Image 1 (cartoon, helix red, strand yellow):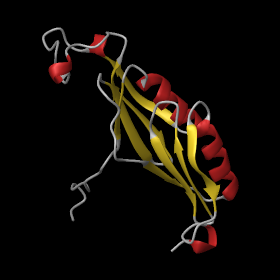
Image 2: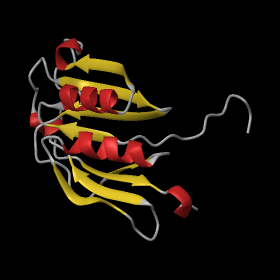
Image 3: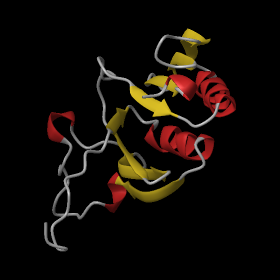
Length: 148
């Protein structure tokens, strides 16, 4: 591979109904990350009023057209888009300490719900399932000595 070739990257992209800025800022703070991009619909060029909005029409000018955060070298992206919350996925967090798993699990559960309490499994010393207050499902894991 030449030095000019870039490996493909895959980024999780979350859609919210007006809560993108609040959600991604919360994740960045909880996970010691930072907001690296934020664009509102009002910032779109005037000659592209529906760009990226599809059949949903033009959202509120204050809503987020695109936002991304960086956490430990990883990128999480999001946008405000009307419609139902996506189903059938979870974001997985694998951490280095039991304490960090407990901290993240507690933080994500504020205003949400723990669907599987942080507990020992055959594949991890600590594993939990949490749905946060924005409706996003998370798996929090500390593999410890069980890690492969």
